[in-house]
Image (cartoon, rainbow, N blue to C red; front, top):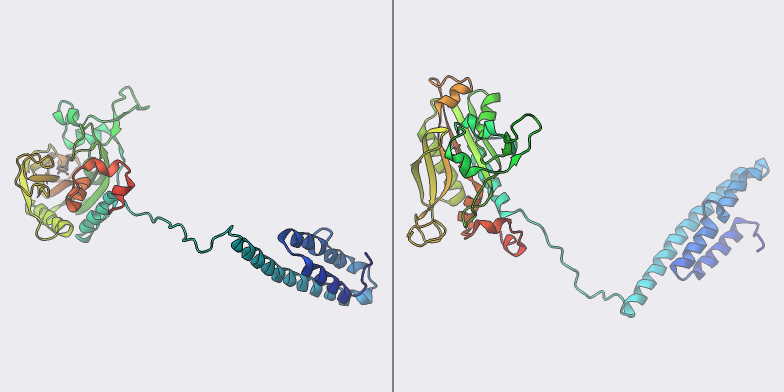
Length: 351
Ligand code: DAH
């Protein structure tokens, strides 16, 4: 092919051949021929600037650069035309049905237990409790001994859970998946001084014959307040306010006396059963009691305060442990706690 001598002639030749390119592969060939980086014609032309007589170099170089810009713009424009034509062809031939509705994207959402956890956390946070976290794999000393559950205590059997092989000593029964969040009372008191007001949310694990209200994995929030003059009435007030936030004014709550080794006195808080509305008898959800327990608590045992180096004559504290799945059950009237962890999207997407 005879080389046109002026850039005008070159431009004309390039544009004519571009106009003839009717599909993507012809456009690619054209691009390689004219704008290709190693031996495209414009590239070669730019490279030849240095072979020109010195007085022509500037003008020739500018003209070549201008031409390069023009051809790039022309290519982009031509590509739009070719693509639009190709799209029109495909749609008339029915290969793409542009009237077909798109596939909806399913939006994810928070798990009902996560939603409930967040609401519980904010209820306490609004009352001035600070959120801290502790390990799920716990030393048995923290999980049991330091909260006054000795080796021969029945709770150890009741909760006997998943033990870790410990690399740190003879006794491979030293670490376990925590059975409750209460070891964090100790962890918090070890590193903080009164006044203390914290909550510790997290997962716990138990040896459990599962049923409608018991799962082997559960989520708890531990609460702890230690200061001068903290009383049982402060605990009750805090828990009333929490229940009001989560369940509204009308929901009935009851406090019972109860026993936990790490508090004295101990209490339990229960909410009226939404299935039988307190009529009891055959109800499988509340086991005939009319109430569903959601929380244990009490006044921190003075021995624990003393062990932590606090003067138990000066400081008193309350603690509680709340079961989040139970709260979620009560909130939405869900009949079986096991549904939360069966990964059934039809169930989970209702909340
Ligand atoms: N840790 C107890 C449990 O999991 C719940 C509990 C009871 C926590 C009383 C407390 C408490 O802090 O004072 O069953």
